[in-house]
Structures are given as C-alpha cells and as structure tokens.
Image 1: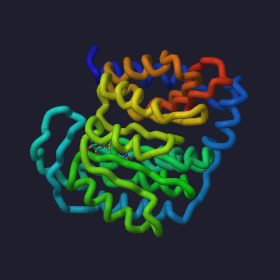
Image 2 (image 1 turned 45 degrees about the horizontal axis):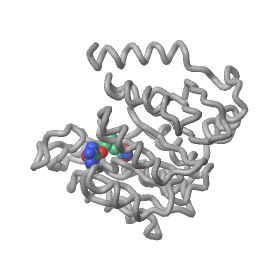
Image 3 (image 1 turned 135 degrees about the vertical axis):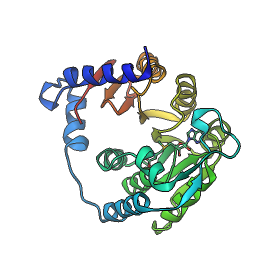
Image 4 (image 1 turned 90 degrees about the vertical axis):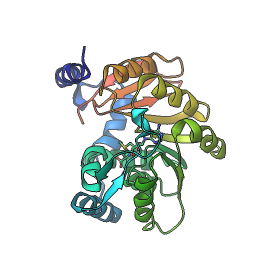
Length: 262
Ligand SMILES: C[S@@+](CC[C@H](N)C(=O)[O-])C[C@H]1O[C@@H](n2cnc3c(N)ncnc32)[C@H](O)[C@@H]1O
C-alpha cells in the first residue's frame, strides 16, 4: 500500500473509531481529557509566538535546507522559502497548545524535543514548563538560527538548542538531563529511527513520563512504528489523536489504547 493510501485509510478509520470524552470509560483518560484536552488556557505568550508564525508565513527570505529526516542530503540541501517551510513543517496552534497544556499539567522540569524547526513548539513547551528546561535538537543550521532569534523572547535561558542529527546528538543531550518528564518526537519520521529515539528516551523516563510522537499515521513505516510502540513492554496507555500519539508508562494502569477526537 502506498503511504498516501495508508494515510487516507487511517484517517477514515480515525473518524469512525475515535471517541469523544463521553465514550471513554477509563478514569485516568477521562481526567486527562477534563484537565488537559478540554481547557483553553490563555497565556500572553501565545500572541507573541503566533506573531512569529505570521512573520514566518509572510517572510520572503530563503534558506538552505538540510533535511536529515529524508536520510539523503547531509551536505547543502535545496534553497527553500522560509514561508513554505513554515507552512509545511509547523504544528498548527491547537496542537502546539496541547503540548503547552501537557507540560503545564505534568509540571514538567525536563523536556526534550526532537525537531526544533523555527522553534514554535519549543516555545509552547517552554512556556508550559514554566519551572523547567527544554532541550531541543535540530539538524538544519539555517533553520535553527531563525529559531534561536525567536528564543530571545524568553526572559531566562530555559531553552537549550543543539545543532546536529538526532542520531549523533541525542545520547549526549540525554546524558545532560537528569530525567525526562516530557518528550516530543517531531522529525525523522521513519520506522526504525523512530523506534531508536523512543528507546533512547526510555533510558531517562520514569513512571509519569509522557512521550508524544508526531505523524504516527504519516506512512506505512510510521504506522508500524506506532503499533510497535503500543506493544512495547514499557508502555501501558496510549492515546491516538491521529496527528499525534501520546504514550504513558504508568505501571498502575492496565495496557489500553484509546483513540480520541481532538
Ligand atoms: C516537522 S519539523 C519540526 C516542527 C516543530 N516541532 C514545530 O512544529 O514548531 C521537523 C524538523 O526536524 C528536523 N529533522 C528531521 N530529521 C532530523 C534528524 N535526523 N536530525 C536532526 N534534525 C532532524 C528537520 O530539519 C525539521 O526542521
């Protein structure tokens, strides 16, 4: 099956099978819906972050893109418009805000992001984790330098941005973190790579760690990666939102997989 057909099939499946909160019988997931998914917090930072998005979408600058996710161009890649990159790569506001809400709910102190891009989700995570540190890795130098300018709005250096490939830099970044409270894996959407990063993250995870995987139905490979994550012995609850998958390790929960509308 082609990736496009796979995506379409998964999407229709999701529309049919995903539940609203009243169809959820797990008290843990119900509580999560009430305290994380449903609230619509307002933070004055949102306007500033969304202003960056608007500026990026209107930008007529170009950058040289090195896409390590494609596994090909490790030398200088194609020249692309910043606006086009922003349009295709960035999480939309309501999904980025879910990361903010999760970070806040968990009172996350140690957050990891794979795939900084222009830094929008990094900023949402950083404002959500108001007492925490966010470690983020990006492989494209010109993309990261735009993100770093955006990070200057944060009053204290709570964002630690690392340039390089996830493969090369993740072990080091994890070594510098005493533990992992929240991880957002948003780049290099290939099956084996995703599983490798997931396993590496587990080495610093604890019972209340939440791992968020992006684009779980993007391709046949990512679909298979998601199934393998769900089957993993360390994983109990998962929540499939179609665009993202949330993974919980809480040993007090029975192994159970949910699909929710978000
Ligand atoms: C989808 S974008 C991230 C979007 C960002 N999280 C947001 O929504 O604001 C994915 C990013 O990951 C980077 N990336 C992909 N594979 C990578 C790898 N193997 N190592 C380092 N960076 C990688 C890409 O350069 C790209 O900027």
